[in-house]
Length: 270
Image (cartoon, rainbow, N blue to C red; front, side, top):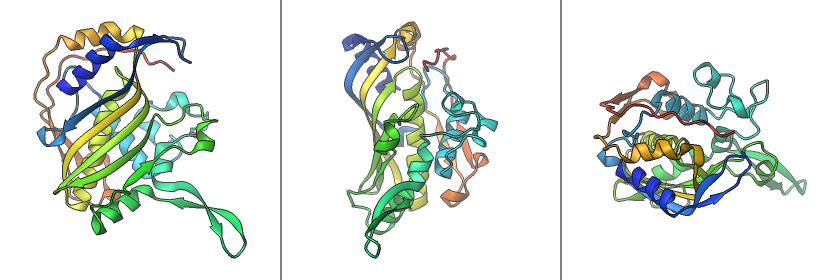
């Protein structure tokens, strides 16, 4: 996928060296952006192998609305480093997607009460009733949580937009690990867009991604330079069973024709 390789090249060429909380310096670039046309295939990198199964498990976990990893960790350890010993997460994307705590004033008592908002449900409702709405926004950034969380949301808000019959998605991310995180984020939100498009009768269009702090850890540079030398291969296609979104399971997704280069190992900075 040339769009990703161009992003890598821009950050390595134009970025500045910065320190950060992990103790491993990064090469960082401000407000990077790219866009991919999902009609050309499912945007899973072919210049290295990406673990599609783990990504799928993660997205289905988000859509479940769970705020713990007890079910997720049966299939992938991707969130283990951030959970407590009971498996609870102080920041769980799915909780905010499906059960965002909203303080609303009770006129009778004059006091604020917390009401949970299903933001994904609201997007589905608007796509069915008012698809040209400019209010199809989902956020995972709750300020009180974000300032105390072990890992505040990185991909913290996204919006859907319909043009003709195409469903487009724009993701804003405060911090993006180019080598490890961004390939997963790209695939995850393309998957989410395809799920929601199928649920509401649209065709997946463009996935657009803005990364405020787009960075490469210095110990990832060699692996990314190797990727830049590889020639992208044709994108795979993703088929999803024709079932209601809330009934979809792991077995309902089929990735077809994923032909990729060999894996490149990158260490995770925690």
